[in-house]
Amino acid sequence: MNVFAAWFFMPQTIAMGWVAAAGRMLLETLVVVTTEGDIPGRLVGALLLFLAVYLVWHFRGDLPPQGKATGNGYRFGHRLVLVGNVMAAALFVFYFFAPSVENYNAHLLLEKFTTAFGYLCMGFFAGGFSFIYQSSLPQEKNL
Image (cartoon, rainbow, N blue to C red; front, side):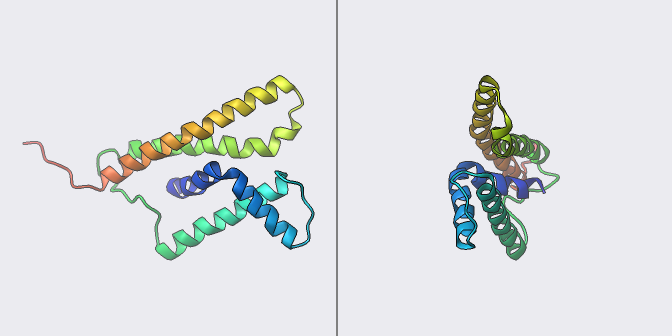
Protein backbone atom coordinates (compact mmCIF):
# COMPACT_ATOMS: atom_id res chain seq x y z
CA MET A 1 0.00 0.00 0.00
CA ASN A 2 2.90 2.30 0.80
CA VAL A 3 4.46 1.93 -2.66
CA PHE A 4 1.04 2.25 -4.32
CA ALA A 5 0.45 5.55 -2.51
CA ALA A 6 3.92 6.73 -3.54
CA TRP A 7 3.19 5.96 -7.19
CA PHE A 8 0.00 8.03 -6.86
CA PHE A 9 1.62 10.96 -5.06
CA MET A 10 4.75 11.21 -7.27
CA PRO A 11 2.97 12.27 -10.47
CA GLN A 12 0.39 14.18 -8.43
CA THR A 13 3.15 16.23 -6.82
CA ILE A 14 5.27 16.70 -9.94
CA ALA A 15 2.43 17.53 -12.34
CA MET A 16 -0.23 18.86 -9.98
CA GLY A 17 -1.41 21.56 -12.37
CA TRP A 18 -1.55 19.19 -15.33
CA VAL A 19 -3.52 16.62 -13.35
CA ALA A 20 -6.00 19.32 -12.32
CA ALA A 21 -6.23 20.51 -15.93
CA ALA A 22 -6.98 16.97 -17.12
CA GLY A 23 -9.79 16.72 -14.55
CA ARG A 24 -11.14 20.09 -15.60
CA MET A 25 -11.08 19.07 -19.28
CA LEU A 26 -13.05 15.94 -18.46
CA LEU A 27 -15.59 17.96 -16.48
CA GLU A 28 -15.95 20.48 -19.30
CA THR A 29 -16.39 17.63 -21.78
CA LEU A 30 -19.29 16.48 -19.60
CA VAL A 31 -20.69 20.06 -19.72
CA VAL A 32 -19.83 20.95 -16.12
CA VAL A 33 -18.58 24.53 -15.87
CA THR A 34 -15.54 24.97 -13.60
CA THR A 35 -12.86 27.58 -13.15
CA GLU A 36 -9.17 26.91 -13.62
CA GLY A 37 -7.49 25.44 -10.53
CA ASP A 38 -10.81 24.83 -8.79
CA ILE A 39 -11.40 21.93 -6.41
CA PRO A 40 -13.65 19.81 -8.68
CA GLY A 41 -11.02 19.76 -11.42
CA ARG A 42 -8.32 18.79 -8.91
CA LEU A 43 -10.49 16.05 -7.47
CA VAL A 44 -11.47 14.55 -10.84
CA GLY A 45 -7.84 14.75 -12.02
CA ALA A 46 -6.70 12.96 -8.88
CA LEU A 47 -9.32 10.27 -9.43
CA LEU A 48 -8.13 9.81 -13.02
CA LEU A 49 -4.54 9.50 -11.80
CA PHE A 50 -5.60 7.03 -9.12
CA LEU A 51 -7.37 4.98 -11.79
CA ALA A 52 -4.27 4.99 -13.98
CA VAL A 53 -2.03 3.81 -11.12
CA TYR A 54 -4.58 1.17 -10.16
CA LEU A 55 -4.78 -0.14 -13.72
CA VAL A 56 -0.98 -0.42 -13.93
CA TRP A 57 -0.93 -2.24 -10.59
CA HIS A 58 -3.79 -4.52 -11.58
CA PHE A 59 -2.44 -5.58 -14.97
CA ARG A 60 1.21 -5.71 -13.93
CA GLY A 61 0.56 -7.47 -10.63
CA ASP A 62 2.83 -5.19 -8.60
CA LEU A 63 4.46 -1.80 -8.73
CA PRO A 64 8.25 -1.36 -8.74
CA PRO A 65 10.45 -1.50 -6.78
CA GLN A 66 9.95 -4.96 -5.39
CA GLY A 67 12.25 -5.62 -2.51
CA LYS A 68 12.90 -8.55 -0.23
CA ALA A 69 11.50 -8.19 3.27
CA THR A 70 14.59 -9.90 4.66
CA GLY A 71 17.02 -7.73 2.66
CA ASN A 72 19.12 -4.90 4.04
CA GLY A 73 17.38 -1.55 3.93
CA TYR A 74 13.88 -2.86 3.18
CA ARG A 75 12.21 -1.50 6.33
CA PHE A 76 14.20 1.73 6.26
CA GLY A 77 13.25 2.25 2.61
CA HIS A 78 9.57 1.81 3.38
CA ARG A 79 9.86 4.28 6.24
CA LEU A 80 11.41 6.85 3.91
CA VAL A 81 8.63 6.28 1.37
CA LEU A 82 6.05 6.67 4.16
CA VAL A 83 7.53 10.04 5.18
CA GLY A 84 7.39 11.10 1.53
CA ASN A 85 3.76 9.97 1.32
CA VAL A 86 2.79 12.00 4.39
CA MET A 87 4.47 15.13 3.02
CA ALA A 88 2.92 14.69 -0.43
CA ALA A 89 -0.49 14.10 1.18
CA ALA A 90 -0.11 17.36 3.12
CA LEU A 91 0.60 19.18 -0.16
CA PHE A 92 -2.31 17.44 -1.89
CA VAL A 93 -4.82 18.21 0.86
CA PHE A 94 -3.66 21.81 1.35
CA TYR A 95 -5.09 22.96 -1.97
CA PHE A 96 -8.53 21.67 -1.03
CA PHE A 97 -8.57 23.74 2.17
CA ALA A 98 -6.50 26.75 1.05
CA PRO A 99 -9.53 28.92 0.16
CA SER A 100 -10.88 28.54 3.71
CA VAL A 101 -7.71 29.98 5.33
CA GLU A 102 -8.61 33.65 5.75
CA ASN A 103 -5.50 34.95 7.49
CA TYR A 104 -2.98 36.04 4.86
CA ASN A 105 0.08 35.23 6.98
CA ALA A 106 -1.22 31.78 7.93
CA HIS A 107 -2.05 31.05 4.28
CA LEU A 108 1.40 32.18 3.13
CA LEU A 109 3.14 30.11 5.80
CA LEU A 110 1.11 26.99 5.01
CA GLU A 111 1.65 27.43 1.29
CA LYS A 112 5.42 27.76 1.66
CA PHE A 113 5.66 24.74 3.99
CA THR A 114 3.53 22.50 1.78
CA THR A 115 5.47 23.59 -1.32
CA ALA A 116 8.69 22.70 0.47
CA PHE A 117 7.10 19.35 1.39
CA GLY A 118 6.52 18.74 -2.32
CA TYR A 119 10.20 19.19 -3.11
CA LEU A 120 11.37 17.27 -0.06
CA CYS A 121 9.04 14.31 -0.57
CA MET A 122 10.64 13.59 -3.96
CA GLY A 123 13.97 13.08 -2.19
CA PHE A 124 12.32 10.74 0.30
CA PHE A 125 10.71 8.77 -2.54
CA ALA A 126 14.04 8.46 -4.37
CA GLY A 127 15.92 7.41 -1.24
CA GLY A 128 13.22 5.00 -0.12
CA PHE A 129 12.90 3.37 -3.52
CA SER A 130 16.67 3.02 -3.67
CA PHE A 131 16.79 1.20 -0.31
CA ILE A 132 13.86 -1.02 -1.28
CA TYR A 133 15.55 -1.91 -4.56
CA GLN A 134 18.84 -2.63 -2.78
CA SER A 135 17.08 -5.07 -0.48
CA SER A 136 16.28 -7.28 -3.48
CA LEU A 137 19.92 -7.54 -4.56
CA PRO A 138 22.05 -10.50 -3.46
CA GLN A 139 23.58 -9.84 -0.06
CA GLU A 140 27.27 -10.35 0.53
CA LYS A 141 28.30 -12.65 3.31
CA ASN A 142 30.90 -11.34 5.73
CA LEU A 143 33.57 -13.99 6.23
